[in-house]
Length: 373
Image (cartoon, rainbow, N blue to C red; front, side, top):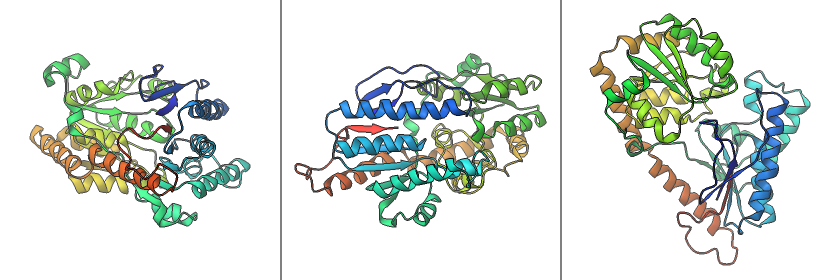
């Protein structure tokens, strides 16, 4: 059972309960102030209540877009006497410090750090998305054998478009060479850098798909940039069509030191699976991945215009070659199928090591009864 907030962050629409999925009520918020903290707290309360109403789980898997999600998972695991596994998507609270949102000398930081260390000590395993997080966690006292690296992934089979490329380009109004950014519009995403780069490369259209707290401000900033357009969020099932219609996929992040080692962005793997060349301004783990796969163009954090210019000038044959290289790499090295199997093996080992009665059987797909994220 996956327990998540009722609001779909990709589409901005409420999510419905489905088999294996339980949406819970959370408070609304705008921006990154107190309202967002209250939203986190409300999720922790409602997710904990929902988790305790489920049948006793074999294991609880807490994912940490924020630390209170991990706290909720630990509470459910403790009360239901199930092992707890913690997944680290963002390294809280360090990411807030690196983004200039929090001071290490503040009371808020000290409280969040205590919560972070508390969760690390109590998790049977800590799953990381990016290899650079391993040394950071070890410096905080997490034993190496409790850390598992299982990154995000994508399967090319999930990115088959529903129509021809020409038809899809007409549907979305892609009349020229088009670069698509598909993802969150928040402070961490550095989309001001993309708007500045788009202004400098008027021969390339830039389309931003998604939502986030910064979207209204970004739309206002882009009013006089003729080659920039914003689209509303779309369901994940429609993403193959948008990416098939585009010529290039853009990955951009704010210039934050932690992002060089501590990110595993879904959009990069989605672009690869769709056979779309990538432009990224993120050096380190993402840049190395793109360079190693031969799947795109890597530029300095503030030099996106150079990457957009390369994409604008490349021949169709070159773009097709680069996109095919990325698709081939994700299929061979980091498919969703392979990563989900790795995660299933890890969780099976945790369940089978508990020594609890009746837990000696192998863990099969679908056995995990509770996940909070």
